[in-house]
Image 1 (cartoon, rainbow over the protein chains, first blue to last red):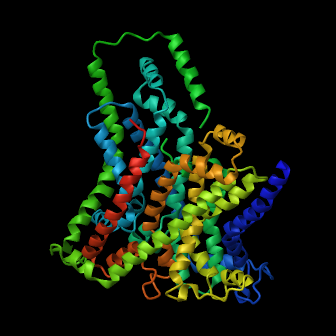
Image 2 (tube, rainbow over the protein chains, first blue to last red; image 1 turned 90 degrees about the horizontal axis):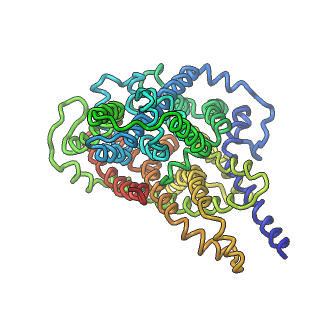
Length: 276
Length: 316
């Protein structure tokens, strides 16, 4: 009886899982296989599910059409800088808000928290004007500095630090350790899981950033990969093989990030929704 | 997230036994003032960046919403004119309507599907990691790539129409028709958001103690009763959170409609953030765009306040 029930469950479960897998992976499969098709075979009837002949030239051609190496390096540099800034500043701020007592602490925390309701889509117009006043359009500063810290990261680090006992810090102080030493040698190592999750989360968002570079970058040498890809689409709209090749390369770092840091990747997302 | 408490305790223990706690020094006030100073100092960069790049822009958004400004001539005060114009502007009203349609039509399926997937993945499954990773992959794809690849897949002779043909559906002119384009954008939104919230629901599900289910089994409850009377009530905080988060994210959708349709055909996919962007950076009407931002801000704020309340529920 029990076994029969379980059997019935499996009949529903596994086809469902296969369907989910199909839907989840189809765009990836399509992107990669079509980057290897010749443009003439792109919309054959019936559709070609396996590229024949396999054609690698799209990668080289796309790379020659635009300076994607530069875009790739730009994106990497900007994303790493933003991630590093967020890890350092959010853990410092979270540590300050969690473990120190001073006048105005609650108000400052509320203020930082309230920035979470000021998304870029709301503030983009005046933010552009501010960055323009600073002469930062078409600079790395303009791409990086406004995003060096974010309310969510501070909130996350503060919550995580709550679980670190105050006695630990007190004891180190009595031992005569300097405040900076306590932070870098005791606090930071204990925060590793939270930092890993925040780091992967931030890197993913920074790699994805589109609206802001679109607003402040007009020089080709400053373009990031998302900008380069969308530009390529609007100027070479019918070279689908090359477009898919570029898309594949742009996705690769995220896939590597996911496979090597899967735990942190998923934890970052789980944490973005949890109260603890 | 395991591991560290043990190490912490060992460390505290070692230090505590090596050196008994000294009596409080007399200059305690002085010491804590120094500490407070350190606390301020390490908070300063964060506060400075957030004030300059978040709060100042918000205040300026209010300021410019009362002005006419085209980036060239100096801003001219016009009072509430921008707002009055907006409320009468059919393009703005259309854009607000499109945004609301997008939020409602993408979020409701996302809630149902992400919860269903989470429940599915919370059961015993062979090769669970493999299936779960596959289901999660939409989150991994960068947003712009996502838009580009789906544009290609939505082509008249593309793979989406081919698959629909297996089920006897006639080809759909996805991005060329003002009735279908919004649905095309919505489907991508669902595809990408579902696994994200699935992860959050999974975290919520795993926090439900197994004893409840065991007790229900002993009482002879079937799967639906279990879901209805244990899972759903205990998942309520997570569900509320997912609802609020997904609505906020959906209100900000931008890259996909911009790249896929540019807001068309016939304005059918011109969501509010896209309209703000175009008003400001294609038509250089900064004041009017700022007034629209104020509308969007009000909508986001209502939901975020709700989210923060959920976030800090059960806190001191």
